[in-house]
Figure 1 (cartoon, rainbow over the protein chains, first blue to last red):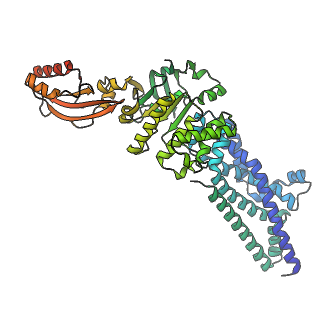
Figure 2 (figure 1 turned 90 degrees about the vertical axis):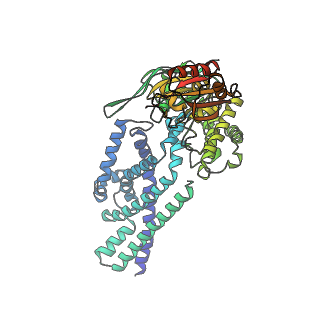
Figure 3 (figure 1 turned 90 degrees about the horizontal axis):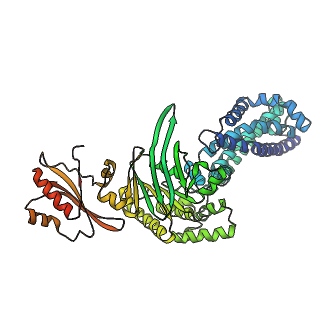
Length: 217
Length: 335
């Protein structure tokens, strides 16, 4: 492999990390509250609200059923609006974030659903408000499960980031596509794939360890 | 003494898939300050629903529930939360936050009430001492036994100085020995802190051990309410009899035989009244079962006896026992 290729792969690793990190972060900033709202407004929960739950649920379901590649293309004008360009690493963060938000929301909702309803009843009987109950009882109790879900989400974002290469995004995915696929450089293809697999495994391992460490049951 | 809770004509109806289910039907009762009030019934009788109307975890369909003369239904969400801080509750499943330490769990109600950190820590430690678990303060609940978890739940329930403690099947998940310890602790707290306690249970032994008064709930209705001693010695309703009578099979040996239950309290238990009966009337009874138990701190004996077939003899025997101050009740045998 050429010196140039090695450098490209190295910067690809950093770009992939950059995209994964920021897209995960932003998708949680929006997706976590959405997940909490989905949970709290569903039937029989603290802030049951069929209207809010129905609307958010619908949007999340639609966004989630769009293939990510289609979403990438659809979001090009929006991306241009936000970052001023639709190609490059920074630009890929926008569709990655949008694509991950519904996944994060559903994952958070399902983690919160696992919390024993008795704990919520206990909190209510103590005179805790719904918001207090969510922040001080439900989320702490769901933390191990949220972390585990977090690891899965980050790994998904990493996988998606490779796809961003198709529309001019950076990272290992773009390198695999351009050099490995279009130019038949099998060596480059296999190297990038191996690196991607290693990165996913690393993220999963860290996530599971964190989840285990926080789990007190 | 004033009433902590007053329920007037309480109805609770659940709607499920268009079908209506009446969980509570016309229940009226009061819980008095300082007492341990038992609510007993079979599972599905509506007792858990009943206790949840006391802190409005369940809204009533009609009728009213008052807490110190305040109608719970009239409270705003904020007022209700303030009232709930005075009504604590413990549960069959303990319901501790597993991801928080024992101390942090116990502090929770004070945190809700906005008590500063240092103060609430002190108070929580004090409560843990009362329930005998000071050395477990930094442990997570998963490391505790069932009995210890319930003690933590009791400490948590007491920490914000409530006016009343609701216990929803609090000992049902525990073995008899631990149940006894938890009940002793509740009794101690009732006496030392003058705390009113409402206990929901399906076990008569729990009621007998610590309750002052008891309400019997049967199929959503209030079958009977009264002093535990009275209900035990002279149950009126069918549901009460079912709970109080020993569950031995006692079919009379002869077709016309009649089975009665005699209850005598501590003041009579020194008299050999069966021997006296034989001596004075020459009539004999067949003892089917007999035991003694402590009900509300007083020793009670109960005996199931079969009477001879002649109706005249039966009347004589019942008259003899009644005159002697024993409570006599009929046992229906062919159910």
